[in-house]
Structures are given as structure tokens and as C-alpha cells.
Length: 72
Image (cartoon, rainbow, N blue to C red; front, side, top):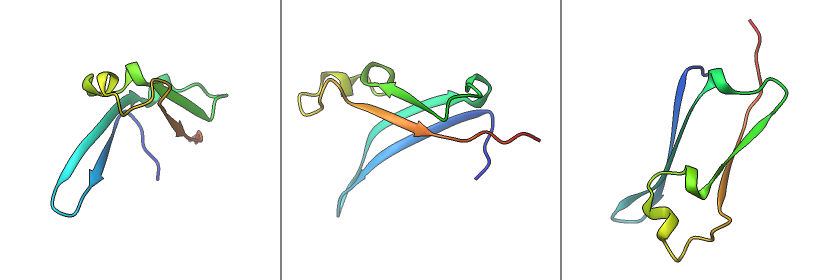
């Protein structure tokens, strides 16, 4: 999948009778480094802020996004 511009990734917990939004991250592809193939979102960079205060979530929690660059 080729994407560019503003990107939003939403994570959900799909239960049998209820879908709960867990987290959301957003970034713009213009700020990706050419030599890096991944970047991390630490707990304080992930929405919602209540995630940071949740005792069930480890304080070292992070989300890693892997990507590759395509030159046109």
C-alpha cells in the first residue's frame, strides 16, 4: 500500500458485543527520514492521554511503525 500525507492509525479492541477504541497515532509522511525504516511512538505520544494513566498499561509501552520509501 502506498500512502503519503497525513496518516492516522487507530487501534481497536473488538469484543463480542462492543468495540472499544484503544489508541490513535498520527504522523505526516513528509517528516519520515529516508534512512530509517521504522519509528516509535512512546506512551506519552499516543492518544488518548488516559492511556498514560491506565495502570494496566506498562509505562514502557510503545508502538513501532515499519515503512519503506518509494521514489517516483
